[in-house]
Length: 350
Figure 1: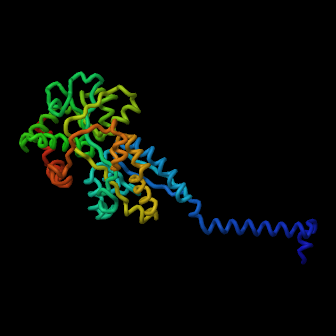
Figure 2: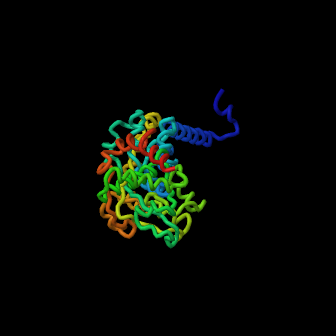
Figure 3: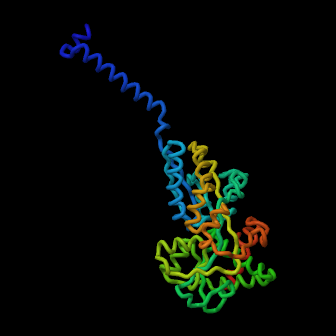
């Protein structure tokens, strides 16, 4: 049977055009089927600490735009926020994070010890894999009715202090170490530092689970006279509750805190997202990434950008964890592990 008998009413010239178009369509379909990754959108999950959610919301959009412009590929970033220690445990238990961006090195080291991130994670990015820093400040009621000026005021009998539980969040560990360290920094003895921290926590009516929970206790439940929190929370409070709701107190001395980051090896090997995860963390060190951090009250490593935002980052006499505690890992063992000094002092203070 000839092709004219199969399609008797279709002219041969039109039939040829029909088959030519069909072949082109088939070829294009085969081409897209053979290379779906050229159009596929990669999704990364960033698991982070509680009070960084607004920063990473803006940072993620800046990175998505940058990645599209430089690679031509779409990418989507999802984020998860809670107390940093709880987040580290969730990742260890199977939460499929591509990257972790925490506020204490011990939470990342915990994951390294479990084989979830690289053993040498701190050497894989500049500044010991900490692209930004912060410090601990005080937020007080508008007008500062209790006249709080420095750490010593937090132990007055009529002052109630809101702070994060150091067992559940890096915010709480940094507040505790800042309180202990400043006592030593001013010439006090270890016993005097211990006594100061005991008296401070005797003034804590409730321990918050994380940084954002602490802010909610202070501003929504209206509990406490002063909130000890990261410097960056000042920007978040002003945005969420309106400027002028609180006064900011810069103590005479405080702790320099670092915000470490790492690729979650277990996840990126499974998903094939190592390249994208690395690009995401690398961008934190770029001028654009550092600018986003500064706008959210997070201290950039770039000295030029830090100087540009000098109105935000007031001069404080800063000391590091290593100065008085050896390392954060050592501080964890002595102060925050079960049965450590925090457990003893907090119980005794109650």
